[in-house]
Length: 173
Image (cartoon, rainbow, N blue to C red; front, side):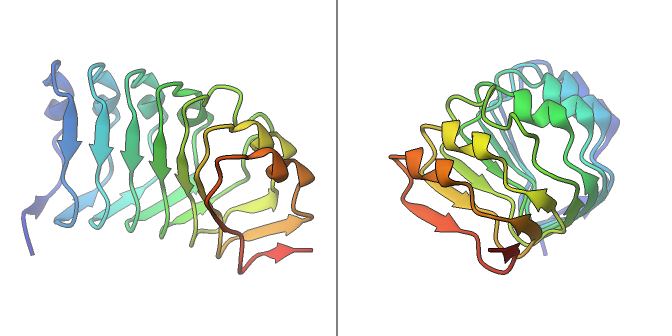
């Protein structure tokens, strides 16, 4: 079962923390806004807990973040646009929650290093933006089991490094 409880807001005072990995435990409650103060953080992995509430927009202040995994929690609401401005991000995994909203139209503009994006098993909707074809380092893209609709953008064929593509269980034509 691991350790549990809530994540104390004082975690934001660990100024030199480079990795915060608390995966597969029994943490519950909200992700504290104060995590956005961890300016040296490169890895944030909280998957497999019982965290709930929205993803705090303050995570967009983590300018050195390379790996973000909040999968398999009880998160809801829209993914803050600030997350899509983390230019050092190589991996993002938000699968298996109740996240809603759509992907930003300029989704790859500020994510030049992104290699892996997992946003499956949520309640995301809208069209898949053609700008996704500009994520030139993308190797894995999983948007399955959402409510995306419309056509699959032809620009995806520009992803020359793409190895894995999951778009199943949507309303795509």
